[in-house]
Length: 294
Image (cartoon, rainbow, N blue to C red; front, side, top):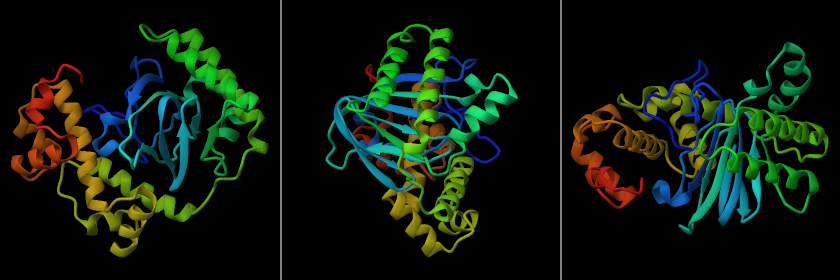
C-alpha cells in the first residue's frame, strides 16, 4: 500500500488509509509490484479489511509472518489490524487490485456492529483467508472485487460500494466456521506491532535499535529476531524502507527540495538518502520526480 505524506496514526499506531475520496472510507486501486523497492511492499496494518486480487502474474503475501502464494485469478482477504505485505523474491512483475473496505461502511447501529461486524473483525483466529475461484463463495468475493473496481474507476459510487461490501462481509461471516485457524504467535505479533508503530510515529527522528526494542518491551536480540522471522529484514533496514516510502510520497505530492525531503524522512544527510534511494529504485530522487509514469 502506498501511504501519503500526511498520514495520520490512530492511538494504537495503526495506519490510516489514503482513500480515493477522503470523506468515504474505501480504497479501490490497481497496483503493480515493481512500484516497490526490490519488488517488496513495506509491512503495514490498518483497521480496514484488505482484499487483493491478482490480475496478472503472481506474488507471495505475508500476513503475521505466514507466507501465502498467490497466482493469477486468486486473491486474499486480510483481516483488520493484521500486518501484511506483498513481495516477489524472484523480482517478477505482478498486477493486482487492492481494495480496502472500512468496517465503518456498515457501522450503522450498535446491533450490526456487535452481532455482524465484531465477530468477524475481532476474530483472532482469522488473520487472513486465501480466495480461490474454484470455491463458490470465494469466487463470489473475487467477482465482487472486480465489480467494485470497474464501477469506481472514475468516481466513487457509494451505493455500489455499500452493496458489495455488505455482500462480501456476509460471505466471510457465514463461512467463518469452516475457515482454517491461521492464528499463531500472538505475543510475537503484539511486540512487533508495537515496534512498527514506533517506526511510523518516529521515522523523522533518529531511531536506534535500543529505541525499537524498548518500544516492543523486548531485548535487542529478540527485536532483531522478530523482524527477521516475520518481515525477512533487519530492524534498521525496515526503518530505512519505511523512510523511503515516505520520501516517494513527498516527491510525488510536494514541491519540497531533495534536501528537505531527506531530513523530513529522517535521513541524516542528503548524500546517504540519494545513495539509498538509488540502491532501491535504480534512479535518483530528482530523476524519479521528473518521470511521467509515476
